[in-house]
Length: 189
Image 1: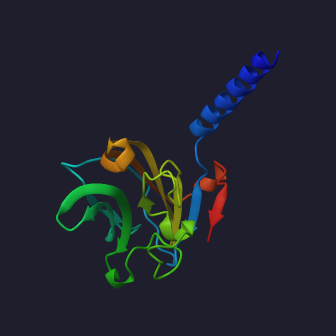
Image 2: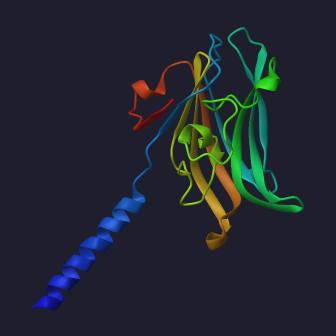
């Protein structure tokens, strides 16, 4: 009689593992080091990044219809002379204060090798051990607006090597707090 019980336990364990693997990771909330009252208009972007078109750059206008920010999705390459992509970086630069660098971090300067989510949420990293899971929704509060980033799909060139050849990213700029409409499990400031 031990045989059937063991199979039931194994089947339940396998099913639980599959269910856990299919759950969506918790959202990450990061308040930028940049405080202020600048607002931007509502805007949604869908970026289909590939090895042939690996970058996206666009200007974001403020509420006075002035080009205020440079939003970029930029590939992180394996190394010099090696064009393979290991991650994409999300950058928001104030065009009037470029010296401040990326506004999508909580502290300035962020520690590049930090294991704190507020220092790594701007990295879109497919590594299963990434500080912020790839499928986590990222909510950045910058000045008086929010930038929400979601990876909707990605493809690895060779799964065991974690090298990317494409990624689909949805980006939303909004003045309303997206946390009011959905819960954000990990609030990082």
